[in-house]
Length: 230
Image (cartoon, rainbow, N blue to C red; front, side, top):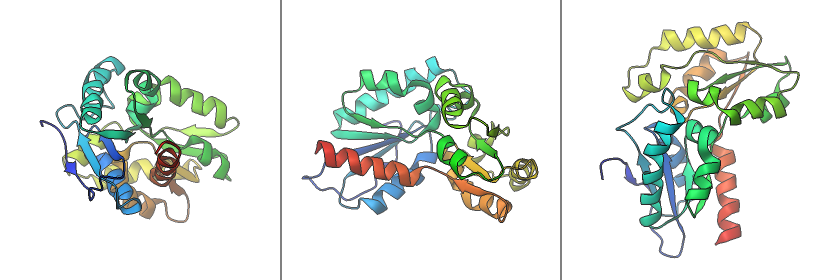
């Protein structure tokens, strides 16, 4: 297998096998969170490290990478797949659901809960350029962030920084300080790679902004899907 991280949970032949996919190391944090919540399930995590980062590529390019990987997960017995990638979810989850005949659970920026939680009327969404340019993300803002100012700091180099383990703390601090100073009291992590610097972001924003990421809501949705279908 030219991509992947392997099985990260104990196999149980009675339980449906869960697939988790991301473009790189970002989704591994999601896979570990799922493993902790559902330890009896066999979990297969796959990362497309040949093509990371996705966030600066076109939807057509990304689709060409993702479809065969998801088909491979189905062929290997996965009955439900978590797409631990905001970029893939926001650009093509509808198309993929027509092409892949198992349940797909996506991850997208938590605009709705951020808009509900904000007291200042300003939120910040840290995401890739492709996510921010997607129609689905635009609809999230239209549907759930009316009357809320949405800041979108330039995080275009964060994925590569995290993948190569070359974290520029000063760079991240400048971005987070800027949105806090602009009034944001909720910061949304709209890329699973950014979960690896979540604690750093929380330190920088402490006392000024709450940081949201969707691992727990995705786990709850995964539990609902398993309960309903299996």
